[in-house]
Length: 416
Length: 161
Image 1 (cartoon, each protein chain N blue to C red):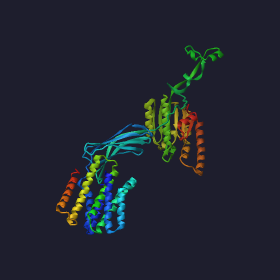
Image 2: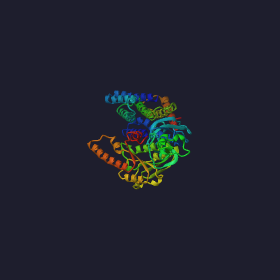
Image 3: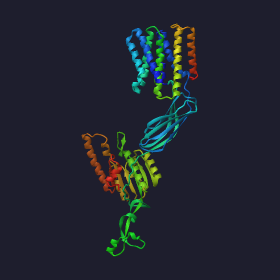
């Protein structure tokens, strides 16, 4: 029964009792229309809907900020229902932008459809329930049925399209690519000269050097190869900053997506390690499938805590190919520098993209006098930390998240 | 159409009460009846949130005024008509709040259900008043009225068909 029924029932009971108490038949007569309304649900109970629901999703993977169409269809296999309202139960994180009634019918076997446009923040969402609210025509009785459905949508992080991220790995793969290897070969950038040996292409002869040294000299070029890149995303809760619902970690995730996309487009082998409450490792691979694997991992990653992963010192380095290029996306903590030093000692090349937590926090609120002082102290500490990291041999790029990553990489020489 | 039926019923319910209180020279109650009539008929100027909460309050106020008028003077047929009209207006408002733009079939179905239910209540009330001897409209008319009430009740049993 609905609130409307309760209202008419209460009015009729009060009028009937008042009529008897005051011995006034007029009140009893006035009560009769209310009694007619109040007795309708007993005379004509709402039939139980035997319905089956299905959900169709326009795309199962969508980038953040875009919207997709979801169509919910409900087939009534039971008796006719006077009025039925179909609604999709959406998990937290999904927003319904638009709701359209496509079709509805009361007869048995009929199909009612609703169309929605939804947007969502990053994550994987399961759509499991459709709510069917059946009402009688007068709105006096209502029955709610939850119908199971099975559908899921993954909202992947929307990264920037970076043209190139400059890296200098100490070891490259045998396949040709775009990364300058440390060995001579058939590239385009000049590496050095050597004495001519029969079979060298004549157009590579360095005539000026040959004239000076009185024998034939050949130019050699830097060989461009594909590289192994391991991206380490810092998902430790201790390094995250959340202000007014905006999280620094989300920026890190987008940066990881952008960098992975950039390296994969240029033919490198890329792996991903989410380092947080557990280790989520995506084995290195090439191409679009690997890109989707990485986006899928980034879609589900959440900041977390675990005693074993409080510091980077437990980083499982055996997962990465020897002397590979490692890209850390982390705001960094004081204890992390020793790990960077250790990795450099093992001949890994390190690039640290460090989202700036101080600028992130300061940009989201007016700072009073004490706030400004605290910011200065924190800034001094962070500068010292980044200097230590640079001294360990890592290339550190401090990233103010209010500026696009591509612009920051370009300014700081990380991008060609 | 439902909106117009609702407005007309609300206006009529308030005006019938106004006429009754004017006869009784209870001017404060008459003024309240006029306010209720206006509130029912021009409620579209208010936001939906206020309309939703005001509907039950207006119904209660209407019924209280009707009950007061009934116990404080001579019972008249137009006073009896005020209550079903107020009920009709309130329920139509609820329907429009639930379904903003109903298809023609749904509108027709709803109006049939509403008319039958209000008809049963009104016929029952009028029959009771006739049985008590408050009015006299002749045996044939009284019998026809009771018959119509019975038919309406049967239609409820048959799912308003």
